[in-house]
Amino acid sequence: MRRRIIYHGRVQGVGFRYTTRSIARRHPVSGWVKNLPEGTVELLVEAEAAEMAGFLDEIAQRFHGHITSIDDLPPDDEPLSGFSIRH
Image (cartoon, rainbow, N blue to C red; front, side, top):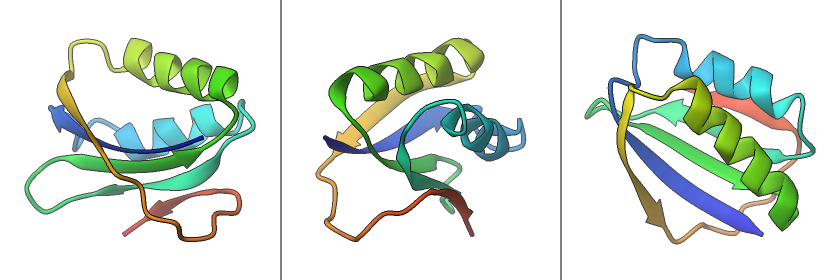
């Protein structure tokens, strides 16, 4: 499964991208994370359903109090390999 998520809240300047990459290393996921100009963070991730849930739950727990809302957007179909931070 694949998801494209926009995180809102205090998600820039708190290590969100680097922590997300670190969390990704503990899960069999592929994708990327990047800051957006309006102060949000975009995540594109692909994984099996159970692994996706564990990965996203760990992000939510780590940034509890920082994330105020999320937008689930239609994911694109670009090829993914590994997990990276985009700029």
